[in-house]
Image (cartoon, rainbow, N blue to C red; front, side, top):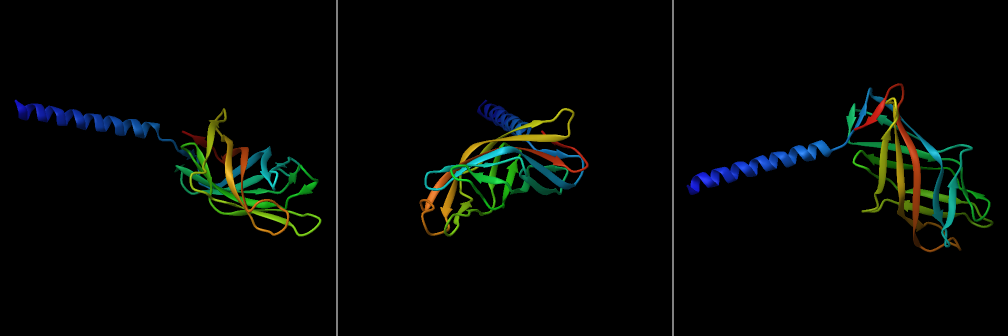
Length: 199
């Protein structure tokens, strides 16, 4: 009787484990492309973040909107990597334009996005330029919400505002040594000459 009960219990545990595995697989997401090739990533303006001692607002405008590029190497991917260039961003506290900069992001189909490499923000001043390094930081992934276009062609991604770490890279009155900035943007992922879908 005890042996039979143990056998039934083990069988029930095995079934529960299989059910849990199936549920986990069902909840997993991925990007599905119709072909391999160039990844497109136009960014909707304005993109907004802060820099400087008083965390002045910066806006990237639509005169020359930010745009990203990447490569689709497989038809199904859990993550996509895009390098986005921001050419037309202005410090709103004073009429200064930031130098063009490029940031490399990893976008996960599970709904988060993180910075892969340090990039630099630089704004000219009356004296030496002010520079800040924006650095990858553990636990600083942004939450991203995805939606597919209708008909299916591209994936719109809305990145929630998230703190990012800044390190002062220049002397002078440019702010504190270490600060944090919030960063938010909306972008559209697509496969050049094909379709991209979030599932």
